[in-house]
Length: 208
Image 1 (cartoon, one colour):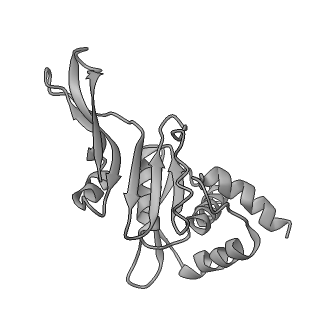
Image 2 (cartoon, rainbow, N blue to C red; image 1 turned 60 degrees about the vertical axis):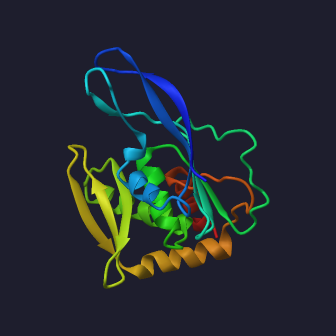
């Protein structure tokens, strides 16, 4: 089930301490509304009882989807808690993330039963194409699949403007095939599948 831990937090605006409930784990199968709170990041929101300032308080949190058999650690400090191997969950996909956007994107990907390895490679190829076209972005986030089956991504520009772009499903499908055929990902333990992983993996695929 979902679990919280009580703590105190110092307001960055007025400097006063206030109580805070930190969500240490979320079981979305038992607490469906938690899915919305992860998507809009309100799971990390805190409002100062003294001055009313609202801010995000990022802290480690484990997201558990029993129906779709995956877990995602959000570890803003990059450290997964000791003992968090869950090796007995043989069919589960286990992932770690370190930023809020990565956290909610990973949940979005895995609950759709998509291969996040292929999607990270797809994002990397898109970023490389944008760079060749002299388009500067600070982030690329998988959003959805539209009614025509195209993969929709959000481009975040340096000024904060967001732009939606679409790629044909064939791009993802080809990469998903190559990942399954040529790349090894450990079946047990939490793995970090991100753009750094994609860059290293793309070099391996080029050599094959």
